[in-house]
Image 1 (cartoon, helix red, strand yellow):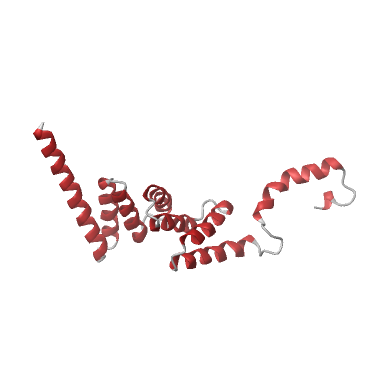
Image 2 (image 1 turned 180 degrees about the horizontal axis):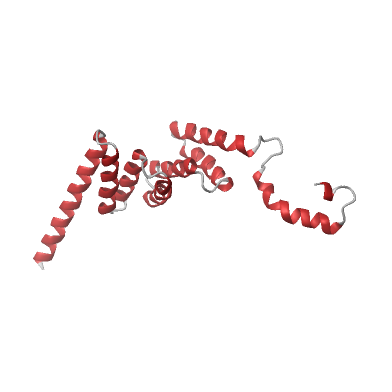
Amino acid sequence: LDHVGPGADGQQLEAFLRTYRPAEPLVPQWLEPPLAEVVPARFLLGRAYGLRGDWDRAEAQARWILDLVPGHVGARVLIADAMFARQQWGAAAEHYRAYLQRQPNDVRALMNYGVTQIGLERLDAAVDAFGRASALEPANARAKELLAMAEQDRASLSIAAGCERESF
């Protein structure tokens, strides 16, 4: 900033603005704490909104975080959870997929991803997700139950498809 003091010429000022203007949205208000403090606070706020079922506000906090820190995995799963709660299966699946690339052993996310796949009628992907969740937590009864139901649905669909082919 020293080179853009009172004696700076117009070219120096314009160069400074071109360099630092992209950072301006990073500080929504001059009174807001530094980024290192804001992101965790907004993430906790988003989780709190999610816990009380206010998914619009939870998602808004998560999107604010992703605008600043695109790789923030917690914000990614918070958006996925918001979409999941609204039964927006395609959008939820996309966000869970991105999250699971970075956190492949998150059983809850795997199970939710599997449910999105059922909602999208992608039974093979659902079976895979529930199978991975069951393998990670063999004592997880819910993961086993979802896996069994998805396998049964897939088998029923396969049998129905076979019967339909035979009737022609």
